[in-house]
Amino acid sequence: MYTIDQQKLPQSGETLAQYIYRLRTDAKLSQQKLAEKAGIHLQSLGKLERGKTSRINQTTKTGLATALSIPTEYLDAVCYGLPVSLIETPKFCPNCWTPGEEPDPAWTLHRAKYCLICGSSLRSTCSNCGQSLASFTHKFCPHCGSSYKQLTVTKKR
Ligand SMILES: [Zn+2]
Ligand SMILES: [Zn+2]
Image 1 (cartoon, rainbow, N blue to C red):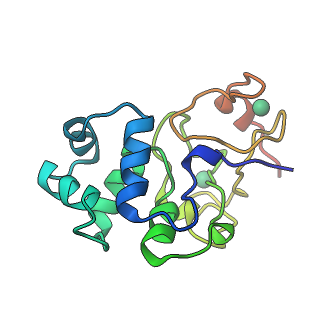
Image 2 (image 1 turned 180 degrees about the horizontal axis):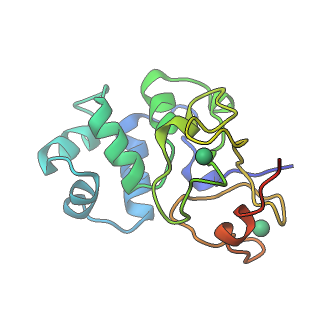
């Protein structure tokens, strides 16, 4: 059994504008702050939130996903109106990932099972309690308090 951070999942029928606005206000970020974090223009963010833009380019998408601690798939799902059930949980390589840092985009690809860099099996859960990784900004599992890094050094051969 695993749970995803429900707060961060796009709700059905939610538009890109509503979604970004909701995540931004949940994170208590001003438009200015979010734009800075995401490395995009304040104007572009304003347009997005007013629903003037429904498609976003890769740079904007990656920037926003990082700034809001969500996988880019969530933004894809909202943009293309995909059902949330198709979205996979964020995955990481236990060998290469430094907890608290942005994961390699290759790990969050749909159907990716192994790390392209070292070949380890990707994980999406805490190896201590089995709860899914809630956010890549977390260094510790919010459910059991274990450090993701400590847990990740065990390598199976
Ligand atoms: Zn790796
Ligand atoms: Zn845990």
